[in-house]
Image (cartoon, rainbow, N blue to C red; front, side, top):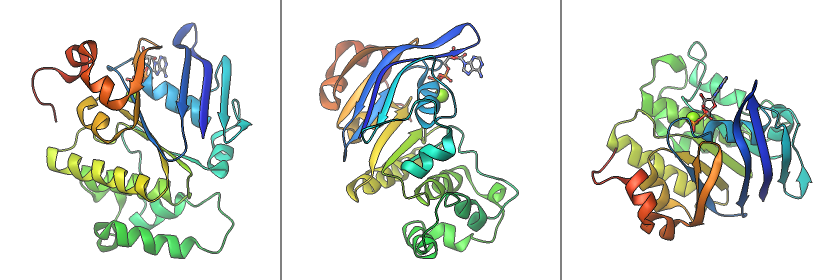
Length: 237
Ligand SMILES: Nc1ncnc2c1ncn2[C@@H]1O[C@H](COP(=O)(O)OP(=O)(O)O)[C@@H](O)[C@H]1O
Ligand SMILES: [Mg+2]
């Protein structure tokens, strides 16, 4: 579904991505793990067109999309749940969800809103409340619902578990798994490597702008270097 080849992205003269390759097969969950500052968000933003790569190819469903603006990649079928959720605090839950459908021209938007309210009952309860009044976990659910309102074929999630309590984190990972089981391909960025690897088919490890390791998620989870650097001895939230 998605193939990234030799992607280089810079901020001024700082090369945040130094030529990375990624492959996300249709139907899979692929995770990109790495420490703070490794370049994970830069990779996600470049893929969806929020940043322009200096070099490389981004091929989505057979079409080269590098350099296309984000509103076009959304229309093609990619949707990003950004780091820090970035919901609109002064708009209602319903208005936030409707924003996700802004590139759609079909007549099924109301049906999809209803589906989202079924999947996330708390959003139905809060539909007329301002986004800013929701808890962190509820805001993350809202950010996911907003992204799904674009009817993505590929859902990209940037650190969806960040700052959430362990029980809420478990809910979020379960929701991601369900979305995937219902047919949406997922590219997941996480610092919470342990839980990301549990639900993923394949994983890439990013260090200072380079992919240093990749493989089946089970193998990556067993890799001594990954265990040492990302899984630690202690359980993380
Ligand atoms: N807007 C920016 N301007 C300059 N440098 C940035 C900017 N955003 C990120 N960086 C730098 O790019 C590198 C990768 O950042 P980022 O992609 O946010 O990493 P991650 O998401 O893995 O924590 C870091 O060194 C970071 O300081
Ligand atoms: Mg980040």
